[in-house]
Length: 243
Ligand SMILES: [Zn+2]
Image (cartoon, rainbow, N blue to C red; front, side, top):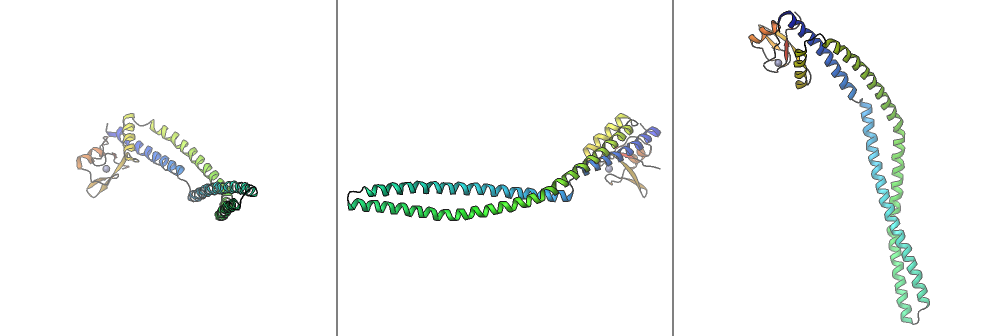
């Protein structure tokens, strides 16, 4: 392919690429969350993680406290039992044995109560911290929902715009020979962007707009004659550009 038809196809292809790049840009824009939303999301997620850790800590403390309480109840029952048995004691020696036993139980209960105090204090601290974090989260949620709603609307509008451009793009593609279009699309995918670039004059020679390499004369000649030509360096299709 060369001559008038080739020149026309390449011009149409370049215009189509403008449309493709605009669609790419809008798609990227749709995928990118606004800074304020990103920042707030990060803050809420950090607070939620903090809350989760506090709730876990609270559960551990409650378990430890319950365990101590059960042990204390158990010991109190044993103390009562020993006191009842002490009243039935037959000898002074037995009396003393029960007294020692009761004293041991009392000591153990006191130890457990002493251990329970810091647990209770920690529980109060954790409860206060949970309330603080929950309050901050409650305060942030409405703003987060507002920003999410705004973002959904923004994305929706962009999607509408993208659909419109895609329709225009399809119409433009009708005017381009299928093999040219196919080659362009393959290069664009490989290069993640441009599949057709202009050839730009640089003094007596030409360079590729895509990769800046100076093009050999025979390549430049073919491009000028509007043959379907690829840059020997970057592989993109070359267009001589508007005269
Ligand atoms: Zn190139």
